[in-house]
Image (cartoon, rainbow, N blue to C red; front, side):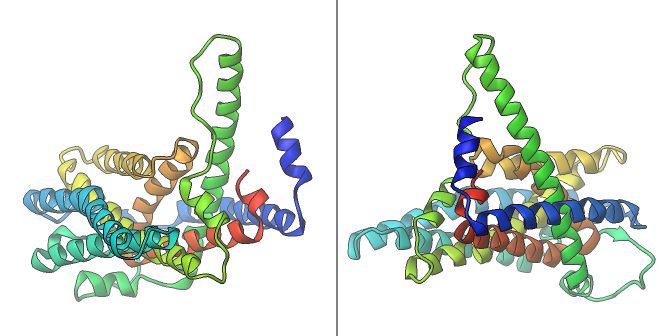
Length: 311
């Protein structure tokens, strides 16, 4: 409670604006979630083969889990050797790794189109569209749909963050009483600290913005919602009732674990799981747009209201 009081004492006008706007967006998001729940449509059965599902699943995991890290390390080492190491090089290297991983997944999608799932899989009353999966995803894309998904995520983010904060406080009290082990540190992700320490009018901030608002959303959506989730869903298709939801839960858990942030694990899980529903209804391009907007929103408030956005 003392830390919270100290944080509130440090609030400026932009911090209070961040709180008000975020709460307003979250409350509107509750209505957006209700609208989402009431949308008509029936989830179609997966149409990809088991072999394509395995290939897509493995490609997504390898591209995100291995190729991204390898290329990032190689580029970072190159910069360190020839130019000296700096924070700008860290995010330039990260963006290079994101680009390499994205290109690898797109390449696999070009060679074996069914390994990368672009198109919506929810059958609605809208006229059916022909053409490639990418064109179907493009026709399902619209600004209102991006806004609906974004507001829904704001609501889910607020609820899951409050749940985590309450759970963490209870855990700390149990630890102080000797009833439980020490809880994980309730600290923001490392990227948050990097953003806070970087001036907007610098080359370093541009590299952060590229990696956070473009590179990460595209790479992560290609991996998690384009390949991993469809692969898991197809492999679990034997259970028509539970297979899809099991795939959603596993994808959300993998997405959360990949970010290595205990304090944000629950919100990240909700984000990763809900984006699977977005992919099913509106396709992969809408997922990418929502993810880019969400990361951009957080980046903006981190610079305008650092005290409020890191509570």
